[in-house]
Length: 458
Ligand code: HEM
Image (cartoon, rainbow, N blue to C red):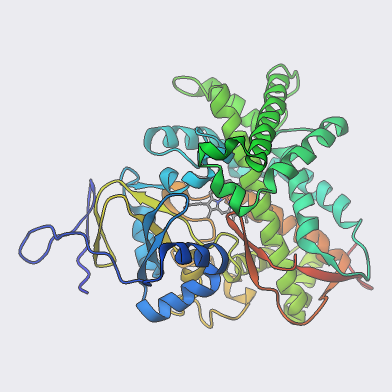
């Protein structure tokens, strides 16, 4: 299929040789019943997508039924994905693409909104994730990391993912909401834990109002109400605080003072905070769990990383984190819903279609990543990961605002872990990815065994 794509101010435009705009054409894809495709996507996308790429090529279609029936066009080629990330945000709606998360994050969440409302939300969120702001978070992350890591059982197998979730939860409670009192932390932690532990079926069912009277959904809705009340009290507390704390919530309240037309209203602020709590801890914890999983199975890379931890070479540790996010992407795909027909990858794609940049496939592109199946942190030493072939944080106007926060947190935690411990897996066979809500987690929880280093840095 010839690729004739030009960029216009209204988005992409495509004309056939005779000057007429062609009718929408769906790329090829499997002919399985939509329910089967949905199940394969939900459970086995990390195996199924590479297979579909082998059969149909770099762009293929799916027919999915959840949360509602919709056609999906999956993109595997970095250049096509880059066009989506750089395309018009009025045509490529990510908020609509994330609709399944609406009942969890809230209608006003930055993840769920598009166009002007989304732009305004990003403007107010970004200062809390700027370089200077991130530097003020470092010490809290280090303190939380040391307290957690020092409790690890030496010589016994344990699930690193579970421990990293506790660590990352503590970090967001303290740095997003600014909670420092132990009693308040003890109230908040179980609320966020329960709220995050939503199963796939409950998540999908939340979009159907009729189910809200049944137990799992009723319970979940009441949990969100409790979390809202807790957050409202914390916001009220922060508004009257005499000191000038440097947590994300305080940044948002300050941004409100200078924002044209005022800051977030009460509901908007609450939805952003719930979004940051959830988006900011499961993802980072999963990235860290995979990092330990990989290092425990690669003794040479482990030694190099331990040396880097001893010598304070954070660039090397960051390369380990970046390579893990490439090799084992925490989020396998992102979505954009088309508000108008669009020409992409040589196809005229119909309005209403979901375009899906497949992060997991892009990261295995051999033209951008030599021996892509191999875990090799050296590839990012002294070299920034190649855009557009390294996209663990998505891209364009929707690129994860917490990317710097996440990489900084992972680097600090890794430094503290490696300065203290040797790592080994509890069994040689690597763990497979398993979908957990929107993330791909290690199926057995990244089980590792740690032992104190004899000549370690700490
Ligand atoms: C390893 C950790 C993380 C990964 C892999 C990750 C990945 C992503 C991805 C793939 C997206 C969607 C981007 C797109 O659609 O193009 C996203 C969005 C987002 N992430 Fe992260 N994230 C991580 C950590 C964080 C942290 C620490 C925070 C905040 C504390 C955060 C907050 C958000 C928010 C608010 C959005 C929505 C952005 C928007 O729609 O404009 N994330 N993240």
